[in-house]
Image (cartoon, rainbow, N blue to C red):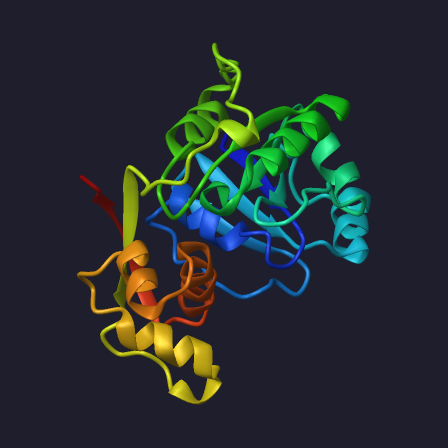
Length: 239
């Protein structure tokens, strides 16, 4: 019998991107599902993407088509994390459940710790992941498939004031889609960033060229990815 994995989060929390990072073979749609969306990841896992809509949760709880095995409640690491109360009942109904801070590459240390505290308050396992860099994805996938609880960090994270700005050890290179959609949907900011995405330069290098922060470029690249203009994000080791 296959596992039923529910990935629940409000709009913009990174549900589709996380599903694609966990199961690259799936034909993930980067649009918000109207009620919920189901993907079959082989015979082992059925993935259900659920938006932050109370009616979707009521439907799945009142007449569940499947018995939920694993529940993931997503929070956006680029913003102050807060568990969506509409989605909590659905995730808490799963025997195996976790709060997942997505977009770790854009998250401040303070937001990571807030999300960790929220997970502890709700008695959920906790993962902080980045679909862009792959950080935390293997551990989350192993937990989904085996139920092995995440190991707590042996050393406490550095205090915010001790962090020294530096180039990331792993950067990412946005690779443009060979046959992109019509550009009429792009904003002027997205046009500028897309023009700089040549499949060779990393987000940090593009940011330097444009005179903005890597976080700003990454935010725009995420939008371009969701609109189908960026095919993939390739890791690039920074010397």
